[in-house]
Length: 108
Image (tube, rainbow, N blue to C red):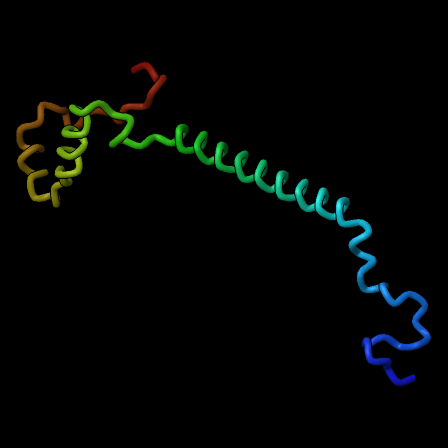
């Protein structure tokens, strides 16, 4: 069972067996082409989905008018006080500290 000079054993019935895939080359090419087209179609659909999703997101710099951007910057500059001014607000208040607690829907 020593291989012959061409690399095939003597008992092998078809010396062209390794080239038999070429018989269906057109089918193979068509199948690969269809897979590539399907992948391209999926990529396009995915890209369209991402673009639609981007349109649905609210992006202030893109979606707000120019004057609104300035207001937004001003809002970012605001800060909540640390509570030291609350005594001053209470001293100027016109509210009755002895009033009953407000409960919505209850008439007094």
